[in-house]
Amino acid sequence: MRIGVITFPGSLDDRDAQRAVRFADAEPVALWHGDHDLQGVDAVVLPGGFSYGDYLRAGAIASVSPIMTEVVDAAKRGVPVLGICNGFQMLTEAHLLPGGLIRNDHGNFIRRDQTLRVENAETAWTNAFSSDEEIVIPLKNGEGGFIAPDDELDRLEGEGRVVFRYVGMNPNGSLRDIAGVTNDRGNVVGLMPHPEHAIEPGFGPDTAAAMRSGVDGLRFFTSAIQALQAV
Image 1 (tube, rainbow, N blue to C red):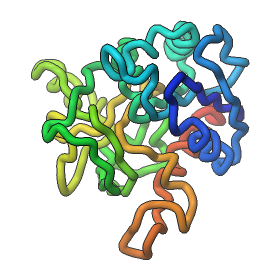
Image 2 (cartoon, rainbow, N blue to C red):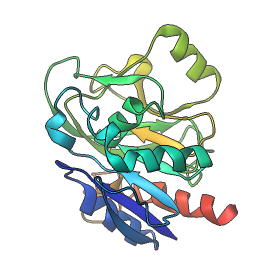
Image 3 (cartoon, rainbow, N blue to C red):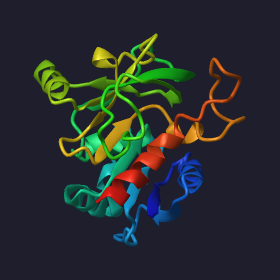
């Protein structure tokens, strides 16, 4: 399986995402924001960072980059697409996911190991989890507050499109503690925490088992592989 990771000006975690793909036994393919070519990849990751300096709004300029035309078309065909942090912001700006992300309610950038509850284990990026399972994934953002009108939030809840919810604390003021959502087809997922930073023992978040032992993030990438193999 070949999973593309797009680099935008200001991307910080593209190499980490490529490494996570490799750890999941897939082939990472480096893609460039200015191209109109996904190089035939089977899935796409939009990584974290500060694309275009987060000018205008976080993810807004990146959402109209040349390659996003191809990403939108691919997503509509059912290709798995994962947006991590800044990538999540891009997906909402490109209208591939509902809602939007705004400045953290406390006004500060936050970095912590965050407990999440898996609300939907049936997407292309979460099928290796169990519903209601609690996982620990590193979080780092300044504009991570998920917002949407009440009727949209009700619809997302009713359709099972809330994928992850913050547990223990709400780190950024996201409405209804929402940490990640999916599209109606389940192939596009966006979340604020960074699964690519929780793939290898000794370098992941702390868990009850041991310091830096958390590898819950790896299952995001193995989920995509399983979803592709099932097609």
